[in-house]
Image (cartoon, rainbow, N blue to C red):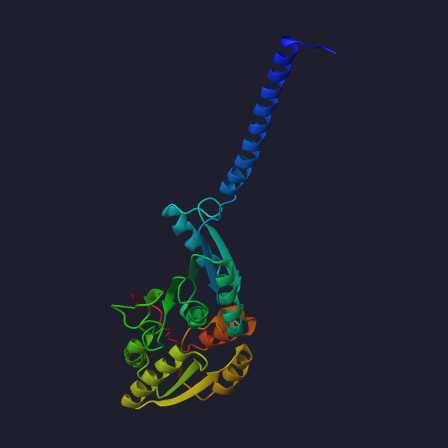
Amino acid sequence: MQSGPGWRGSNATRSIETTRVHHAARGAAVAWPIAARAQQAKLPTIGVLGLNTPSSQSQWTAAFVQRLRELGWTEGRTIAIEYRWAEGRSEHYAPFAAEFVRLKVDVIVTPGAAVAAANQATSIIPIVFPMAGDPVGTSLVASLARPGGNVTGLSLQRADLAGKRIELLREVAPDLRRLGVLVNVGNRSSVLELSEVQTAAQTLGLELTSFELRGAEDISPAFEAMKGRIDALYSRPSQWFTSTPPASTHWRSVRACRRHTPIGNSSKQEV
């Protein structure tokens, strides 16, 4: 065996070097998870709840993503977007909204029809609606000037302008006597607007017939029922009209018959 100071010095040197290696290894073991976590940091996430199908809202989605990019938000790099599509079925709103809450998205974007379900799911996550018929009347916001809460967006002011639309329709079609109204009775905003239409029709001496929709399956019977009974049709946009093939077919037949179909979607006000 070797002995003496030389051996002890050599052994001590090896011991010191081994200790340095162990410390370096431990440092790397600590540093690597930190770096990995930084790389895997969660991007700010937008939850988009669409009322229809991806194909029917493809232009809207493209414009939305493009505007985000112009503002410096690029999908996959600086933000993430989670899409959920209700495919014209309102019973999907609540489950999708609850899923967004579980995913802890940073903001929920959805049209007015689904805002109530989103607001029931969370009072903390901001909710933005691109459009809503009557956000005050449907209690989505407290007022246009001071919406309060976690909900904001654009008001189409449909109910407020319903009477004016009927007046304009009468000017376009002076022989108008029988007016039909196609309304989704499950949508509170639609029901509020119907009330305004009824008041305007009564003032103008029009005979009003309402055709109620509770689901996409009611579209075909409604169009069949209105044949020969109305001179013009007033309708509000609905997710069913763009997500169900029978609806588009009936709209084409109505237009081919030169029916007048005013749809209120032009006046917007930010809330």
